[in-house]
Image 1 (cartoon, rainbow, N blue to C red):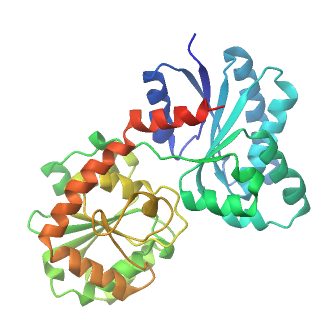
Image 2: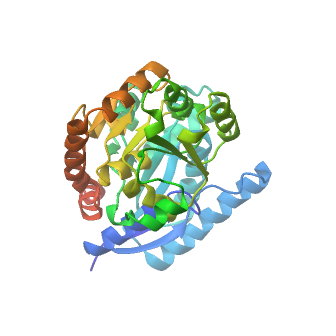
Length: 363
């Protein structure tokens, strides 16, 4: 009989990632079911949030009894609120589910300051409990594993590094798509995709544009929304570069994926604590030349100049120089394109699920 895995998947973010993992495990012979597990409505009171976590935990218990899986696999994050939710959920499961169960958590991003959280409840109860009762914890970069292992050795022993699945077939080159989003064929198209916040390096991109002698031959496409969206648009006006930029606002993932096949390069100078930024690795899958920062998963999988040009995301001159180098060197872009297409095979569904399978059923 096939091993059974119950997947706890988020209600909104990372849904496609979770579904890809379910399909991948089913394809290699596992019996999988899913249940919603994730963030409550952020606009409700703390009491209602707590009630939602408890209610969801009991739903998982009922699902466990009906399905009787070998493994419960929860998509979560490593930060205070998510850790508290995981603690409550696993505590309830251990109290009310009597059968043997392996618990695995995959964290989509982390705030490692939780390791220094001095509150009694977190330091003495929540983190020790999770350390004891989460059998395996999947993180998305070696850096996270190393820092946690050095700070909390017992927790570090349970941490494994994995990837997200990247499906290149979701990005299709299309003249209709380019027309819809004002992506001209006679311009070199630099792409940014992500939350529009300063920490993603968006202002460094924008402020580099006036320094480019070839700026009129380019379009810089910003896909996403966020708290700094209006400020970014206003600064574009002040810099007199409105003709060089496109601001799309928020676009759903299914539609957004097509940008990668319809542009010429990615500029992603983030200095936010990324885990495995999907914009970056979807660009790898599309064979795009890339400018980014050497943080977490990026430095695990990419190297300069084979795949990327590294920059300091805070520094405008750093971003400017990288854009100039990439734009002016066709041979470099061709090498990146070929290397990134080859590298993308590492992130296809079967490759990632086979790697995760080794972790799941490793004694």
